[in-house]
Image (cartoon, rainbow, N blue to C red; front, side):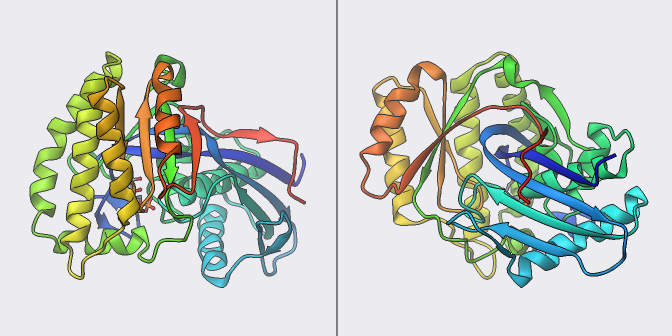
Length: 334
Ligand code: PMV
């Protein structure tokens, strides 16, 4: 068996958002979440297992395509996940890890979801034992990134929260072929966000709207499920826009408040609402960042791309779509 594995794992966009935990260290979410796995926003991660104990080497690919040492904060997070994975999978030794994203990191496009799903899948493959997707989901979230629990599966994915079983793995509601939705991501800022989602989860319960939000979520999830099962974009879109605004309402009313939006975020939202006035089925959602994911069907994609492309505040567009889960690749990063 090879001692080097490369995995390409997808990011995902949350339609119903994990925001707040009952136990942040074990990543037990306060609420259920529901996402669409993406296809082009991916992390490629190469992991090499070394027999000898010793320090791990953690690298990232920089903007010019060179492998450089990861910054200490990121390296520490990866080390923590490697330790948890080694313990869970019964591996000893040390690792060399290198990772590259096809999209801006830490800007609300779930780079931790794809990165840590890739890491967990790679280490499980190196351990050489059959690992189910459910096991991978549980392993991936031990990184501290809850959304990674959903990125090990393709298509439309639910991850239970406190009301069901917060320790349960994610599960696929429908595969990608069920409904070919597009996600046109309007990148208004590629800068890493100032407040991490971990801090956001910690602060969430300080919002006076946090508890009320929990009460509203079961009905919203039911609507989203039905909308996906029936491929009803208007129904899904209304629910995801309400949900996105509410996540940011909780963030903005936390103590201290967190403002992820930028003025350009509003510019994109107005454009999306204007498109709907022209009968284009486009619906917006934002994770913990200023960038806007515009969900539409293939027949409306060109109109969405043309309209967003004209906005002054949009740095660039990423044309993504629903996609499959992680896959192995022979193109190693080292
Ligand atoms: O997975 P984390 O801990 O980075 O938190 C994800 C937070 C959101 O992206 C805002 C919501 C979600 O469910 O992905």
